[in-house]
Amino acid sequence: MFGKLLLGLAAFGSAALFASPADAQWRGGPGFGRGGPQQAVNQCTRAVQADLRRYGRFGQVTDIRRVNDTRFGYRVRGRVVVEQPRGYRVRLNRGNFDCIVDRGRVRDVRLRGLGNFR
Image 1 (cartoon, rainbow, N blue to C red):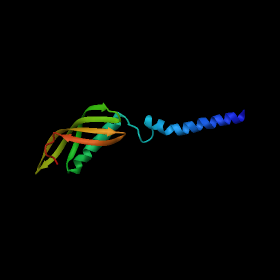
Image 2: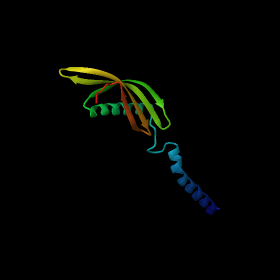
Image 3: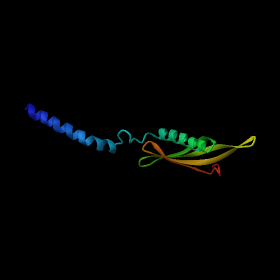
Image 4: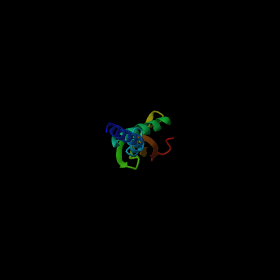
């Protein structure tokens, strides 16, 4: 009787051990999570500002227009204002951005309507 119980527990434990990685991946598991929409907005805001700094410009995200749910993450759309120094004056250039977050990481950032800021 005790041997059958022990054998049953061992079989159940091994089945759970082998099934858990696929189950964890299917449900998002560690490292595969999508995060939440607020996390996607924060990541995209930092990515847009970093992309602008790469070209020597200071940019500020002024508005988040839309956060769409995608299969593996989120698509964030918003508005950005970029300061472009012109001699002793600063010119403000307004544009839009489109950011895709897949599996908790920023995959793509696209800036539009900023003229030739690069």
